[in-house]
Amino acid sequence: MASSRRSPLILCFGDSLTAGYQTPGPTCPQAEATPYGLVLQEYLGHQGQVEISGICGEVTGEMVLRFRATVIDRRPQTVVILGGTNDLGWNADPAEIMRNLIKMYESARAASIVPIPVTVPSLRVDGGLDNPDAAAWLAEHIQRRRNLNALIADYARRRELPYFDLFAETAEPDSLMLAGPYSNDGLHLTTRGYHLFGRRLYEEMFAPAAGVPQATPSRPSKT
Image (cartoon, rainbow, N blue to C red; front, side):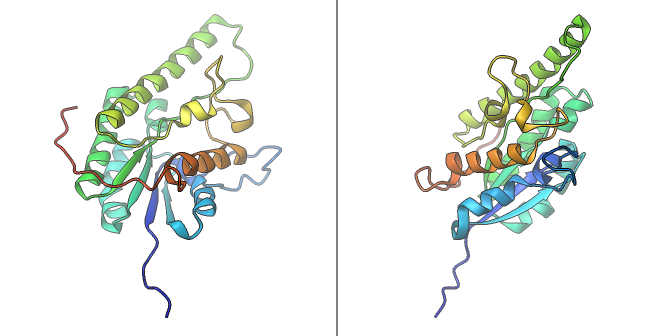
């Protein structure tokens, strides 16, 4: 008789970086979506069931509004949360973005769902950086991403949560720009970038050696 036990549900929640959006390029002329969640599913096999909920262009305030219906009501074991890139594009303050992210992290924890925060990746500009104004613009925007990511990492450490540092995985060590092989438009990832995302997420968070994260009681946020 076949077992009726279901594999743990893992929900990937976010914007276009979760949807796997990419612009046309030499390696993907049809610009087919390549969500990292599909890569994660390949590595997990029967260890887990992955569902993907990514909406292109969505800001974290919009993510908060659909979080209950999309995540809480589905009752996954784990939710991987990546948001903030679009907010930054609208020049939102990192602290404001973090407040929205915390609402989702805490809602998940209150429902005994493990949130896995993901840092936002860097961006890339090819050419024109010999112009001081262009170089200053890029440096400012990379720093704003680093400021948000520092808040995400600090929250995860204080709450003893696992988190995935997508910025570090995909940035050039010296320039801190999004590495060329991982993006062909300077913002979204390429197929190679999304595959790296899914593989490294599995290795760090879900591989048997790492163990599937377990829920911890939610404590009132003082952030």
